[in-house]
Length: 459
Image (cartoon, rainbow, N blue to C red):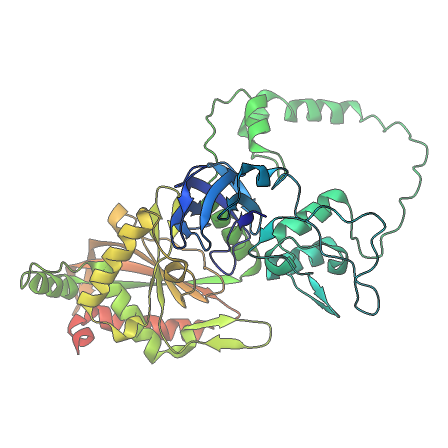
């Protein structure tokens, strides 16, 4: 029977992906290791290599398809000696659900005749439940708890039968798996709503006038498309990429669940600018940026104040041994944060070269999952856009993110006299569950000292 090619899980958290492009067409010979397709994950476009050899007999999921679930069959591969007749019915039916288990653990007898043998699969699903343990993603568990759903009543569609976000959403929309659900009580006789008093009716009419509606804030829960269409506001639709959807979900979750507070400090960077110019003049093999100094200073400050290099869990605070610095990079499809790992062990030139390479591949969508997933502390620098000061949103599960503004000449008081200096404002966003104000202030004090004395970073 044909071999099923399924949507691979290209990262531990991936539940679905977009099939961006097929690099093989039906009838092409496929060898183990051949790149057969490009898959767009949450953050990057990655190549998929064939595991088995044969002929690509049938493409089931066409390129450009979005939201393809992990382990869904996307194509069928004919083995040596098989022809197109082996494809009849292949991939047309949904994947068989796991067999129900009796109390003794043996498969329960099926009430109907067994279906025809399915094509071989390179990754069959397992049930989401083993004994009293339920396999589900953290997000799925949280959604189920918030919605009052019983996870044991939900069938998982993720890797190895794991319950994922999509499964919980389906249960919510279908109204199934409610904890202690009771039949809905019959509706009583409907009564006509009381009519508002004349003064109330006039107030309501005024509030619903086009002028009032245009000036009012968009009501919560109202779809922006419907809202704009009804008011005659012209717009064009730009489909959300997988990356944009993930950004929206994670940032909303961060603001709703992480107790942010903010600490801002001003840094004088005249000496840093002078040191940078001197170092760049010594060689054409590197060009150091202010951001390279910021990354280096952040990593060294985290080593001196390890309490700021931490993350929150319900059981314990995780204090990281290395400063893996996530650096925000803008791409055409959204924001991504490639990581300079163990940045405290790297010099300025090594950081600079690594950052240039990561940023280029981030914009090209060619980062590997391990190059942007993880990190212990984030930096977001908008200084190159002239932004003076801003507060960034924490990137969970990290405990802090440093927002870096533009360096600009400002008046300062030095030795009792008015002077001019190049000043850069930085704002530390802190998860108060992990880092207290005193710890955040201590980190910024060490960071300020390193930035204002850049030669100390070279030692």
